Structures are given as C-alpha cells and as structure tokens.
Length: 370
Image (cartoon, rainbow, N blue to C red):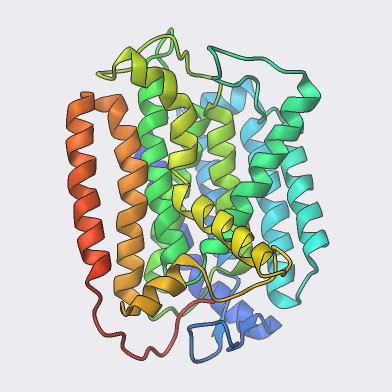
C-alpha cells in the first residue's frame, strides 16, 4: 500500500504544481471558454487543465517504474507505456479542441486511435465475466475495448458541466475501483495486489486530487476536453485491465457466492453510473427532440440540479453523494455481508433523496464550468 500512496501523492503534487503553469499556457494560446447560452459560468475561464493532469500521470508512471514492487509491472509488460501513449494522444486531441473547435468525427477518430493503441500494447479485454468466463474472437474483443474507451471518454465529457464535478466524480469512481481491484488482486493465486488496474486507479486519484483545488467553485481553470478525455481514458484502461481477471465462480472476501457472480459485471458499470446515466438521458432527450445526439443542450443532470434551486457548490456535492452512493454501495458487497450493504445503501439513498428535494436558493456565481 505504501507504493500506491507514493504514486497517488506524486500524481497529486505534480498536477497541483503544473496547473498554474498550464493556466498561463491557456491564456497564451487562447484556450478560453467563452460564455454561451447553455453555460452556467458568467465570465470567460481558461481551460486545458487536462494537460496538467497528464503531466501528473506521467510523473506517476516514471516513479512507478523505479519502485521495487510496482516496477515489476514495467519489467513484465509494456502495458503501462501503452496507456501513457494513449493518454498523450487523447490529451493532445482534447487540447486541440480546447484551442480550436474540432468536429465530432475528428474527435471520435482520435478516441478510436487511442483505444487501438492501448489494445496494441496489450491493454484489451481478454474475456468477459458472463456465464463464468466467456472468450470471444480477438477482433471482437479489440472492438469492445475501443468501444469502452469511446463510451467512457464521452461520458466524462458529458458530465463536465460544473466546477469540480467531473474531477470529483472521477475521484470517487477511481477510489471505489481501487478498493475493488486491490481486493480482487489479493485473491489471485498467488496473491498480487500490484496490478495494472490498481496502479492506474491510484494515479488517477492523485491527478483528480491535485486538480480539484484549482477547479472547485469558483474555478480558476477548467479541465476542458483535454481533461475529460484523459480521465475517461484512464478509467477505461483500469476497467479493461481488470475485467476478465475475476473468477465469478468464487466468492470474494465476505461477499456471498451469489453477489460474487454479478459483481464483476456491476462494478465497472457502477463506478461510472452517473456519467453513463447522463449520456443516455442526453441521447434520448436530443433524439426525441429531433436533434443530433451530440448537439449540446442545457438538460444535463447538473443543469437540472441548478433548475431545482440548488447553489453551484451544493449541486456538485449532491452529485458527489449520488455518485458515491452507487459506486461505493456496489463495491461494499465485496467487503461486507449483503444485509449490511443493503442497509448502508438504503440510508444513503434516503439521505440523498431528502437533500436533493430540499434545495436552497441559488446564488449568482462569478465562474463555473460549461
């Protein structure tokens, strides 16, 4: 655990220190988020925050290669370098979009290329925990790998709508996934907690922690597409590298055999449930209105929180609560008896419903995300 803490802190400190420099860069290259009709910020704010997080992740990778145990990940496989290369690709793609608007097809092509690069370096779905362990032809698995990358990157991009929202939700998601992957890895034969998924999750937590002080309301810098695509890709990489490593026929920790069968399927979905829900609702809403699914609007979950009457910060914290409820609640089945998990989930659900239904008067804010 000490090495994971070192990776997390390295990513956090480097990201925190790099963010003010990237903010200056954003002003220099004109990466400024103007105020638009669908936005909730009231003054132009610089973006490109994803570049700082990429620097933090790269620093964590460089450190990891020099640690006694995590360094073994680099000795046995080039997978982490593949993830880093894919991260550079999507961050560069997002940065270009932050400076000058790219069309949707170009962004989609870049996401596909990044997913393909990861698969080329071995970070790909090898099996699916369906009906035991299901193996499909390699072209199908590579296609599914790329699809996971595309969906994950766009899901984070969709939810990046309030100061600190995307970074906080991804922090919660990566924390839950770290706990899950650490537990699963400790049940390997032989036990080995130093897995690719745990490393990526720890580094991702650090990147979000280092960026949030600059991004929480009122934000001084937005992560932009560079950040949203990067966080989505890293979440996808952790999920992909872990999926197929679990034997659904055996129970984990105190989980019952029944829950252990479903957890390998539920965990990857649960950690990103809020962004996934937002993107599904957006596609349905826009299609029903006769619009293109990727056409921006003002109907996202965070917009609805503001419309209810919550202030900017309260809306973000409530969405944190909903995200944590789903992600941590699902992971808890791997650690706790089923009855204890259900009781905890019902308590948090009641709390989330009550707080959501009791808004406070929204106050005018000087800055917020798009």
